[in-house]
Amino acid sequence: MNIFEEANDLLDNFILNHLVSYHKLRNYDYGIKNRTNVSQISKNMSHRILYEYDIVEKLKKLDKKQKYTDEILWRIYWKGYLENHKSIWFEYINFKESSSNSNLLRSAMNGKKGIDCFDTWIEELRENNYLHNHSRMWFASIWIFTLGLPWQLGARLFMRHLFDGDASSNTLSWRWVAGLHTNKKPYLATKENINKYTVNRFKKTPIRISNKSNFIKNSEHMSNKIQIQKNFSNSNILLMFENDMYILNRPQLFNSYSKVYILSNRFINNELELSEKVI
Image (cartoon, rainbow, N blue to C red):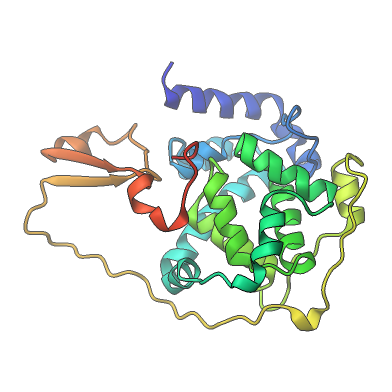
């Protein structure tokens, strides 16, 4: 069985056995030993081993509540938004770390903050290269509004360790939590919400949210879609990137080129310092 068959089997198993309860259970993080309430196909979507539009077609008659379909559409939306606002990406990767944050940042990245949930998620991120989506939101909120750390450094931490790290979904989701994507409407984690949706797995969750006056000021980003050059002097070579491995319906495309190259993220994402496991 190849990787494409494995990914589709994982998706089909989720649809057959767990899709019906997804709308009720999707926000619960039961821990690494029980992930049946979510599909766990995100790493395959991030590299387009599973193609978003194929998944939506498969779900049209099956996802009665449309909650799972909505999650797929969010990923498509993030991709389109970042494509049309590329200055957000350049601003993010060019962010310079402040030395004044060094001690706080070090203790946070090492999971030594004394906040049970946060410290556990750091360990889970490093060891399993995955976090439940709801936990990612809580984590980001604590990182930004409890610890007062820059969202850009948290986004880099996720990209370094997540197997499903996706430039658009990750960057814009962190900005959404910070209140930058929705104009001063941040996502604020609360002890009650965390306790409810983790089924009281954590004992020490002292969530302290900073005053709203300290919320991050948004910057204006013009729509600046990249212009595509349509005519090339030598067009018999095709370049593919590791985040678009969708090949199942492309034999005719491949046959029209003399060579096909796939560029590894080791070479195109050096500024993000990806971990060896992710590479």
